[in-house]
Image (cartoon, rainbow, N blue to C red; front, side, top):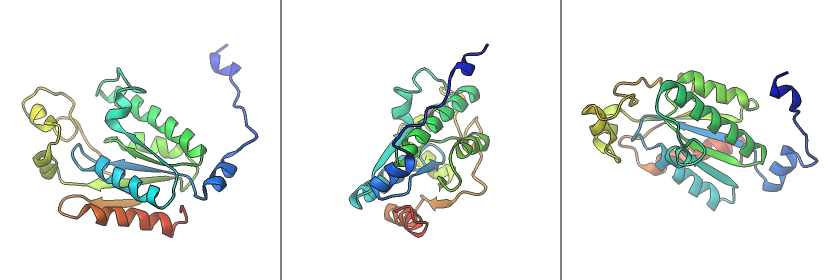
Length: 199
């Protein structure tokens, strides 16, 4: 007998609908994806600040922060990247169930992994945001010096250099984060949430 046969989901008296109504918002997961240095965390952080100023209830899951705890010990191999995204997806699902607007900033290079997170959530609750910044600009920024190390062969399996990044084909939102001011990206995302009644 497998362990899972002894585990049953327990429905609680307080449900997602009540939690959402209490917060006066529609929960969702804003999934920011893009290359390292594309500005995912910067845009996600600015969007969260804007949402909080509006009175929204949020939580931001960021790549490095998660790898220091929940995903500590995982490498950047394809298998470990898959597990990293699986764990994040499950946490984001729980936070959405709590009625929050969840923001996640992860490279998440493989379409299949992002799609699997989408399948965890009710329809329309997963909002993929492609932070579309050219590789050349990401390399120029190189805030952590990772591209330089990857080009020197000091880092293996680095997305965009010797590991693939599969661009979203049908992202709900695409923002360019090259020369565009940060506030433009923030407004595009906030307007999407307003237009689709998340706020």
